[in-house]
Image (cartoon, rainbow, N blue to C red; front, side, top):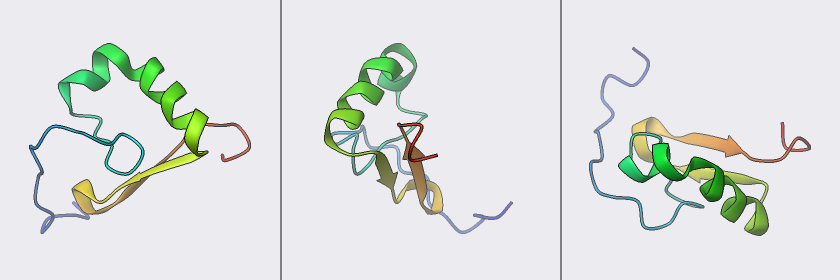
Length: 62
């Protein structure tokens, strides 16, 4: 695994734009509305969880 030293962050997400987490319980239930919120602010969300990840939410970003 590429992130064997990464710490799992089990804190709930409070800022989906800068700290999103696909394992947060709110993600499964509200993913589309979360994507829409992010899209209104920025084309790509990011997180430092799990070693860093990016979430492009527009076709132009991809």
